[in-house]
Length: 107
Image 1 (cartoon, rainbow, N blue to C red):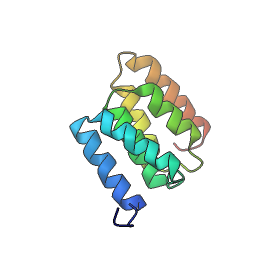
Image 2: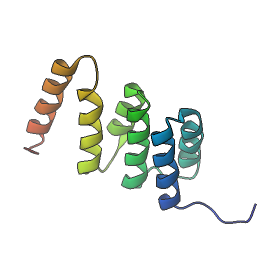
Image 3: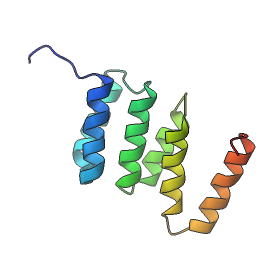
């Protein structure tokens, strides 16, 4: 109640901590805060959410966030590639993402 609101930088640091501790319950609350306060449009915040869900083993939520991102950068793509290369369906997912990358002219 100090009247000070967290910035995009505060949120990215909190989400990074949630990711490293695999504290998905806290991360989901922060995600709700991000939505409520319109901070999801910052690519750094979206990437932090993406990384948190990827590291927590929630590929569905990570994919939804990735799909809704208006702006993606190298960190966005790296998070998704990392998520899919660690999954059980490694070969299938890797082919899928390589085709997406090639289609977008990234490689």
